Amino acid sequence: MTIDPWPIEPLWAQLAAGLREKITSGELAPGDPLPSELTLQQEHGVSRGTVRHAVRVLRDEGLVVTFPGRGTFVPPKEHSRQRPDDSNH
Amino acid sequence: MTIDPWPIEPLWAQLAAGLREKITSGELAPGDPLPSELTLQQEHGVSRGTVRHAVRVLRDEGLVVTFPGRGTFVPPKEHSRQRPDDSNH
DNA sequence: GAGAATTTGTACGTATGTATG
DNA sequence: ACATACATACGTACAAATTCT
Image (tube, rainbow over all chains, first blue to last red; front, top):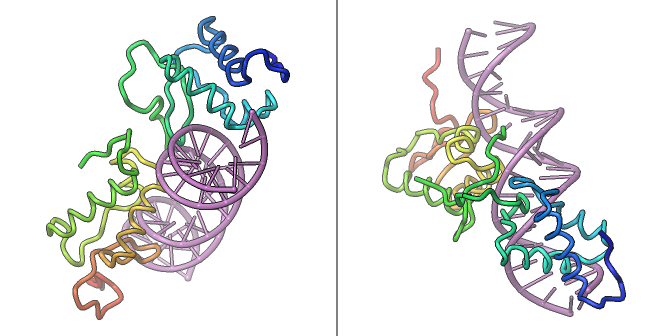
């Protein structure tokens, strides 16, 4: 997945498309976490704002759920509004 | 007392409010120890940092006093003694 | 007194939310 | 689109103080 720095589409749209493809293809399975915002911005050479824009789009589409302080995940079909993982301590 | 994982208020504020209620209601009487940080984080499913944040708030309000290595206690009105319990030996 | 267990103190790392320039 | 700062939240590790065995 590469991001065109001379955007025909906005950077955030290209990034969103790339992530969407990974989810719909199953490369990112239900329950899997997306790469962190920091990882995404480093891997694609874009700012955090652009990453967050892309992720917000996917969230609005229902493709991912975000937990403050924990990460963004591909939700299972029937996800209760709980933590994706409680097997800590 | 339940903590909403989709916080309208921050988790630490909800936890602090719950503990404050137990103190003001008398469920936790002067001299009583609060549950340990470990107990609180396990009971409410939050991190220790969140627990410590909540307790710090109550300490700043003067509702509790903390003794390193011993615990956090509801202070008597006139706290003349440093040790909340000295019934040893 | 020795050693283990418990409890709080501190530090660091990672991640997202929000606000500002 | 980018950069920075701060708040909230989780996790880990270790140290210090105290208590228990």
